[in-house]
Length: 446
Ligand SMILES: Cc1cc2nc3c(=O)[nH]c(=O)nc-3n(C[C@H](O)[C@H](O)[C@H](O)COP(=O)(O)OP(=O)(O)OC[C@H]3O[C@@H](n4cnc5c(N)ncnc54)[C@H](O)[C@@H]3O)c2cc1C
Image (cartoon, rainbow, N blue to C red):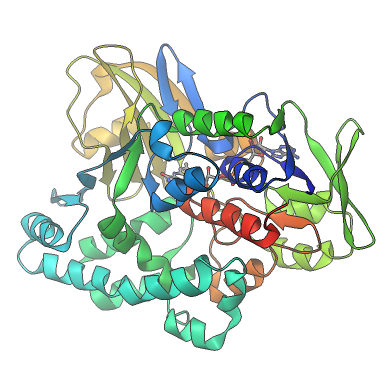
């Protein structure tokens, strides 16, 4: 049995802690703030409660596996609700596509209905082409505990189409600019440029079509609460209001962690759920940190979209769970946040230069809710990054080679593991959950 210190109680830290405790290790989680969840914590005002970061789950199998492997099925704790429509796309010319999930035929029909005959077939072909890419990614990169090393294999890189980019893929596939923006908007929303994203970044629409898009009833807070209960059941101590300043080593292995107030906790294993630039730049006191510093100090954080949380009362337009208003700024509205009876809570995320209040910009895009706003909370990118100490979108994509170099650094020395949005396999609930599973697989039973 190892003494494990998990640093940070974001999803990555919570998931790693639950899995390692189930394997019989003695786990303590240290969290800088007074509650768990990191970017998944809600923000509240005037009786409204909005998800502060993630709003939807894709590849729910990763969460299901986490709960099953750490104790009991997820259904005992959390209600995952499948969306019928992944999101509504609204284009500058007024065209609208309500993109369903689950299967090919309904997607073709919806895209044809919104963008004209033939558009659906083109969209389906683009999504179909990701089938093989996903199989390669899953079996060679995501499932194996050291799968990140496979990125450096030229054969794997070729199978993944790593030499081309999502931008080129979309340009080749579509003449219709609306289909192009539909294909790349998630990359843009998550803080990267499509020309920096290797082609395998285009698997997201395939994953949504195949495995659905899911909301968590009660918001992401419910998922965090379930994980905290799970840790309690497994005897994991979560120490709040405690920031870790250093990971110490002895004889080329982790020996413990030190809090900012100088208290030392012995541990043979440290799992950090932090920005890797902080881990390699400040926390890890060992020559092995130098390689990480070189790779990560040139990385750019994937800046979160600014968000305007709205509390609405009155005759609020009925919209799907997510609506994308394409254009500049790109606007993504989620409509499932918690509100007092008879009211609705929306989160309006936007990227680009509005040049005016975002609620006014929305009027120009056909959505006028100015007279319905009774509560409002603004959170720009800096506020969101300060809240967790890192961008919950992790680091911006910087091509395949950078991806391969970063992926090789999840276990820089004996007893040290990195999880979270900033490290392999990347940001997003599913990928961060996968990273935690890798740590458990590398460590094994106590
Ligand atoms: C706007 C936005 C929308 C998103 N939407 C989605 C979505 O819809 N679906 C999806 O799957 N993903 C989404 N993501 C990504 C998702 O939020 C993250 O991948 C996920 O929350 C995992 O976060 P994490 O494990 O990296 O930890 P974080 O949430 O970054 O948490 C890190 C924790 O570590 C703590 N900490 C920091 N430093 C220290 C220290 N020195 N000592 C102790 N504790 C410390 C912090 O306080 C924090 O609690 C979104 C991200 C953003 C920014």
